[in-house]
Image (cartoon, rainbow, N blue to C red; front, side, top):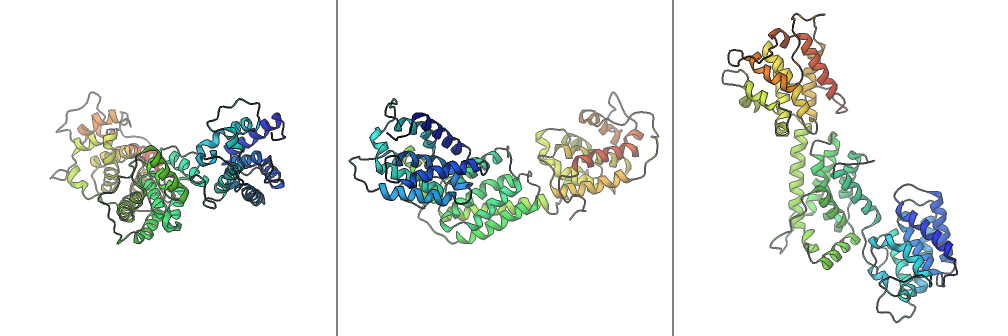
Length: 489
């Protein structure tokens, strides 16, 4: 039917399918040539009997053309597709519908096999739509417009809506990031890019981009991000977006609850950030019969609430993660009325368990700040407290904690120490289970009986032991932040 032998049909469909699957990798001169050859064949006879074959080839390779083509490839493909659409879209036919009207990006997966089957009259037919509908000139024109819409989203009409290729890539990237497996990406740059995308968004896309920022902000404030400028970028983007939603009114009695998981929230936001994505949202809602109406999901009144909530969270956590951290509240928690340590509570908070993650940063920084003015026995406890809390801190201690702790630890490590220990027994082991048993008795022997194995007070307060603890802790913290050598802000 096409005038192309079956072996060539198979080879070309496999090549085009390979280009479709690997469009996100990198520019490929072999792909460029294959796409240009296909476009040239179509351009040579855009209304002829082989137009269907070459048009579907360009539809399969369109994701590559949309992202990474070499010089002149996109122009040549667009020209060929526009010629085919112009030559075929008004051809007469008796069909009530055509396959292209129901074709979305999920169906692209099967185009290679369908192409061979449709073009070969001897092949077994198992498609839902008849072969003559697939081969109809108007269907070919429809697939030419689908390919044009993939290459330049929104450039044509009368095709099923699609989430743009780049946006589908963003959904996949953010899914891996927000699930905790950010493979092959720069986390800081990706989050800052989402902030810039919100700032640059067109008015109708702004609500979606704000929802993407909402999703990545949870990750950004978790403590995993260690670069202050990333949070600054997010704050600035939301600050600039907020006035666009302020003073809005609506007649909605209730707004929908937006997704509470990062990956789901990001996917919805990206989908709402383009006309094609919003069309997909509406189509899915119509087909599946659930979900809030689009106008409610992007309602400016709801978006004002979202922006204010995101901004409050970002500002609060930015101060906690990078600002001057107040630990004065810890005095009431870890000191008795007489000024001595609440040794049992401190020892309990040093248990390496998830329940103590909430206390670790403040307790460690408080201990480091108190160290210099403490007595000899208290210093030993405080140093071990710093050491253990920095291990418990999750995902890692924030910048003001690291700075404050390192300032103390480096001073301890640099302090003069004797060439040999003045005690005969070993230093306390740096394992929680062991120093947990001995620390209360060491600090307050009159209150706590000795453990079975009891280190001497000289072993606990040994300068060489203190230096070893400090050095090990410094090694674990150094490099967490580019600027970890400064003093506290």
